[in-house]
Image (cartoon, rainbow, N blue to C red; front, side):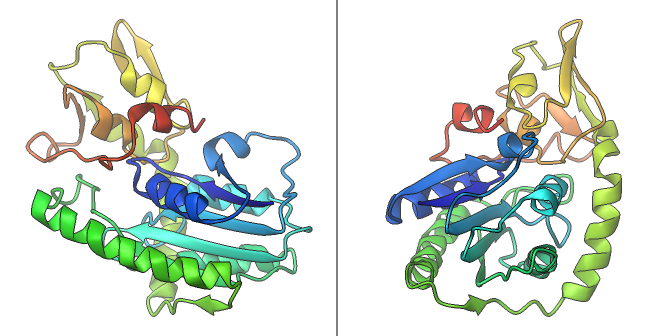
Length: 258
């Protein structure tokens, strides 16, 4: 038995995790957003995969906290795949290695795969042409990752920016829960409640038909990108920017990860 643990806001990491599972024998997919709630978080698999997006040059806070309490005593081979808009891994793989070292475990293989960037508080989503090109190249990269994983080889991507990444990510993880102070629903909101349902950490409550964020946010922006009215904004810059979620990932797949 082998398991892949994933975290995904817009579906990029979930898509990669699903493709991995389809091409690996006897493999189960487990969402981090569901697993991290368990009191006894112990792996029973000999091979473990971790798939997650890059947040502020490192691990999403939920993934960091999950790994920090995940008992991997019976696991023999561990690999990680980071999805990111620029294609790098920042300090994420180094962080995984450090967390595993606390259990005398090793990260055997680590990769990064470029996927369409979607952190629209800073920049717009790439054009459809650029997204299609990125998807094509990501499939090629994934095939190479699969070869290494199937052979259980040891190969970890270098991280030249890991020192800066560790500092930036530490600051991010300390502040992320209250980053939702800039999220709000504008006049286009029709009280559909999709944002409340899709939040992987149940950070949104509907009050008088409008979403209210509860300050334990992960800043995955699933609420923003999956809003059918494009009514959810982050600050002043997102109203004119495109929304994005992976075209082969359905909304219920994101909802069901918690």
